Image 1 (cartoon, rainbow, N blue to C red):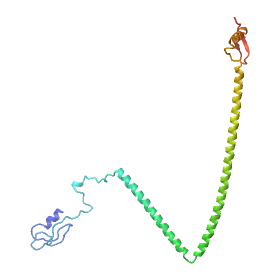
Image 2: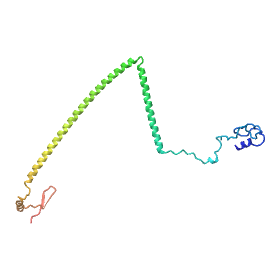
Image 3: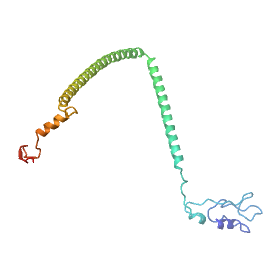
Length: 221
């Protein structure tokens, strides 16, 4: 580049076009100018070719992408998602509107009567099926209610039987305690019971075998 500019702007008449590529190459000198450019033109820098090495000031520069804020990326992603959802809903609405318009246009054609009759027959069949399904559902609900009523009745009867059995058990326990209370030691029969124990001593110092039979007993002193 410098060699080309020096060749064009050297003093004296230009003998021919400047060697090498560059803007204004091959232009003759203007009248009264020592440079090889025309009148009114100034030297400009040419563009580098793809084979030229990088400049020394930019040889060690590494191009890194700008940092991305995670929060900002999350917000942008969410907004893009909402945008796509809105666009999808609008497209679906427009598609439905177009289909509705086409359906209405078809109904206005020559076969609208046939389509209307077919529609009526289908609606009648649908109504019949709905009635049948409603009757089945009502019958099923009635059966379920009857089963629930029977289950509740059985549960109530079971609870009543359990309560009655519990009451009978409590009555038996009360009667047993009343019978046992007859043998309790009270202040009234304390002296009699002491005399009875002294008159009839019992020896509990004995040994038994595995079958529960007494095999050895000590003599009371």
